Length: 312
Ligand code: CP
Ligand code: NVA
Image (cartoon, rainbow, N blue to C red; front, top):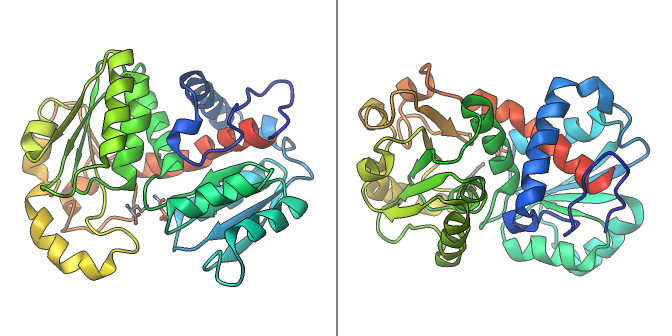
């Protein structure tokens, strides 16, 4: 469990293994701190002085790895990085009990959520999920920051996700419903977000006055939405399914026609990397509605806030 310095709100769970490790109040505090750190980065240059973070990536990354390494360094700390399978030579529980002796936190991108959960279970230092097969909580913190920047209070607004009910869709459901946002997800049959996630998101939505809609019709999902989100049809680890998925997902592409069903002020969101011509057209991602590089920038600021709350 991390000691929290005066001035930074803490995260009671001491980790971000899933979106659920942030309480509603912690989520709001994190978004406020992310905005503050973005506005005044110079004020935080020594906040992690003398602190080291282990960065473990089993899968490729541009945004997540760069922004975590930059975030730690810009906060005055440093990272040690390992690329490749985490448990190739020894069990995860032993990896965790080595890293906790040398570094003050662990950021991990894994194939399986179980690897994140095992790291968190066996290490006494905070563990952050930098994407697993089930969740991508850090992405969605930056997405929430981007939405708040564009719209202010998210209560009563609608985000529509068209495509695969994957890790990003799961995290959007769990985080945005707590901020009062309606979340509509349109997928082909059999590709819906995880049932336990949908059930939890419905409870969050009920409490915040929002609603969750799961449908197979992208137009029904997008109708009147303030944000339209998509992600690749085959995630990392599903490469062998890419060809068949292209046939299953073809009608879920975010193109100008689908965007025209959204609210006139709607923005387009994508976690990136994007496959232009598949889940999104080049025209939409390059359009004035696209906020994808704001999302990418905010990965840095939102993760700085997370690191301050977990490690400072
Ligand atoms: N959005 C995102 O997580 O990108 P990377 O896979 O490049 O880290
Ligand atoms: N769903 C994608 C997100 C990449 C950032 C994947 O897991 O590959």
